[in-house]
Length: 128
Image 1 (cartoon, rainbow, N blue to C red):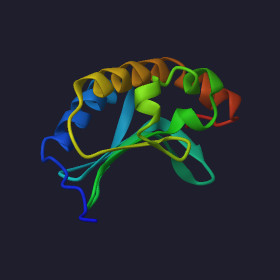
Image 2 (cartoon, rainbow, N blue to C red):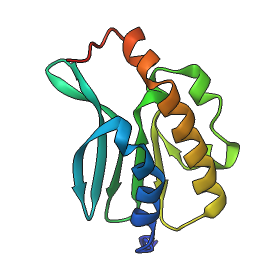
Image 3 (cartoon, rainbow, N blue to C red):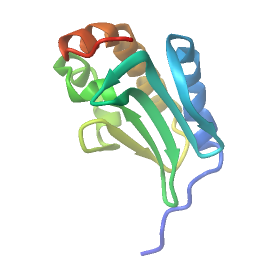
């Protein structure tokens, strides 16, 4: 089976979803194939605490939303169609722009961002 072709507009469209939240986080990476937000001043095990990351891979673009790991309330808000794109606990893969899925993802990111400070506190992660 041939590998799927990733539409070139997928990565920038996913970045459009995440960029409005950048003011509440630090941008760790901002390159043409990687956009990563980390919690401002939060460290865990001597490393930064990721909030979200978008990475362009060979066969797909991946969107990681880290609060999904520890928050059942956020997990329950994943729309069924978006859940079909899920890989693991906090990752969604895309090869094409899908406005309905992207709208669901944007809503999920907003919900996750609103509760992220509480998640950091519950995990015992202190901001420096």
